[in-house]
Length: 239
Image (cartoon, rainbow, N blue to C red; front, side):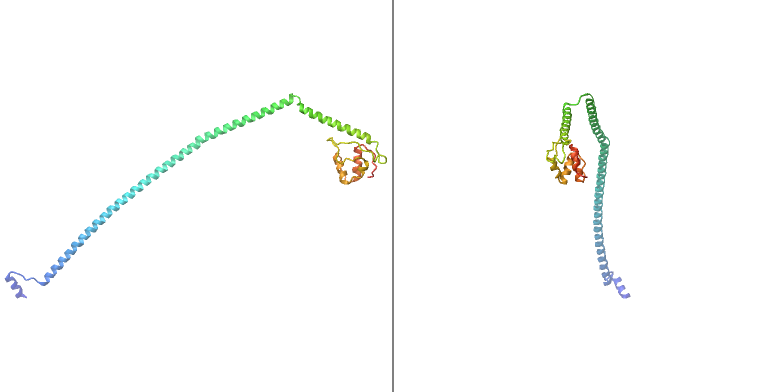
């Protein structure tokens, strides 16, 4: 080993050692790899920085959109509040005044109608008290009185003739016309006493009822009651 080093020293030149050359290449390769890694890292960092910048811009845009949306919501709320306030004011003032005006008009019309009705009633009452009964009403009263007198006269004549009738000698004698309070003769008025005695219960009750007499369940009572009413006083049927 000492002789080799001496020879190298004496000759002034060194012969490359294979181990050192290999180490130099390895170092060079490692350096290149480090340089490539640094380049890659710098590129990646640059890309990440650009992404961060873009993300920041996107967030800024989103923030701006949110801000604009919030502003629009606030503006809409203010608009709705103004609309609500105006509506409340209209209900409180305008609508109220219109309703009161309408009610006043209706009340005035109602009061006028009531006054007109009251005045008419009072005038009619005064006219009734001071003006004679109308001619039409007087005529109706006169007709009613004439009818009453005629009915009374007709029945009085019939009673006067019937007073002489009896069942022994007058069964075939015709009965004189006899009318009720309305001035009409009953539909079942008998032609004579013989016909009266042959009436069944229903016709006899109808006859008594048509002349305003009290109907009895006993047939003999109804016959005697009718004969007494038309002027025949002899009750020949036993009760």
